[in-house]
Amino acid sequence: MFGQLVIGPPGSGKTTYCAGMVQFLSGFGREVAVVNLDPANDMMSYKPDINIADLITISDAMDTLKLGPNGGLVYCMEFLESNLAWLQSELAKVKGKYLLFDCPGQVELYTHNNAMRNIVAQMVAMDIRLVAVHLVDSHYCSDASKFISVLLTSLTTMLQMELPHVNVLSKCDLIQKYGKLAFNLDFYTDVLDLSYILDELKEEEEDSKYKKLNSAIVDIIQDYSLVSFVPLFVEDKESMLRVMKAVDKANCYVFGDLEDRNMQQMLSCAVGAEFEYEKIKTVQERFVDMEETESEKG
Image (cartoon, rainbow, N blue to C red; front, side):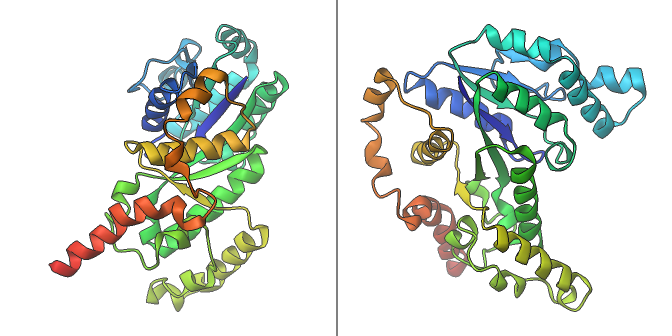
């Protein structure tokens, strides 16, 4: 079995991504099952095949144990870890289907708490070949300090989860909502020379103790040289196709005959996908260059 572990901070678009990817993959003839692992997710835009709410909800944990939202979420995931027989039984019912795991958004679960990592390890032991799809809101690119934070979080998550990993810049249609980008989009997707982004930090930050801290963080990210991003606009088929291809490459998914035939109709979208600029050209032209032109006119 193959699947995606869809993770990322709250509001990054995980549920929207899962709903869109279900429709997209189904169009290729891929049988998909969605697993909701977020006990606080009660507004799903898809019908889950497996729902953690059947085992535990965050409201139950908070009311019974008098916990806050963060503590309740951690407890729920540790409770799932202690009751993996339930999850294994549910997964057996969708055997043979491609799996999409809609996961909680609490960052601590993927940076230093071991519950999610242990749950994933057990699923890998069940011969479920997973790839972590880490969604990050693309508007963070417009703020240098936030982008550095996003890079460090992405790197920490990659090291903690120990899975094939695809980082995704989500909501690319809103990429300049909070400000104009200082560089072309490929600077952010390919994570090029980060010394340039240090110059974009606010003046008050440059004169403070955080200057050395940001410089050290940038050095760590560049030393590992692992973080890069695929831009995503869920409503754009070409964008979804590029993400799907990156994910399938990461976990070595092999297309079936039916899906292979259906894919031939869209392969033209991916011509030249090996060239870096081609990966972001559509987003650059639609949501970055367009915004620049409109601002110049104003």
